Amino acid sequence: MTLMVIHSLNHSNEEKKSRLLDILKMKTKDMTLINEAIDILKASGSISYATVKAEAIIKEAWDGIKDFIPNNKYKGCLKTLAEFFVARKV
Image (cartoon, rainbow, N blue to C red; front, side, top):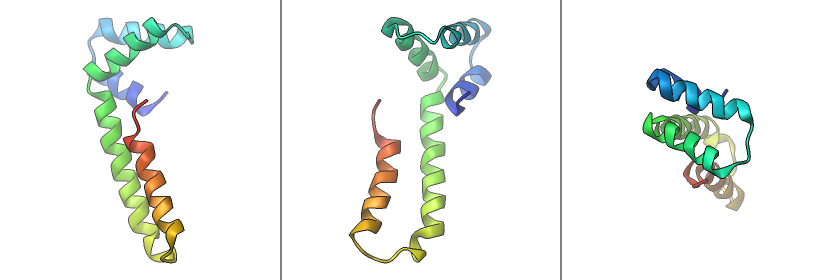
């Protein structure tokens, strides 16, 4: 179970919790159902919550390793890649 799903289950009403779990158990490829699950995650603030958490983890990790990586183009690429994974829109 992902951070977003756990957060949503803790911040949604019983109807939305049940519906989200039902959709996830289906392991569906139906975009209508997938979008419904995404809407539940958005409504509970779970996507925003997970984004903030990911940004904090990346910052903490970067602060811990940045002084050990030589200053070159790869260092910048590594940081950009980490930031991309959080900023990308799926």
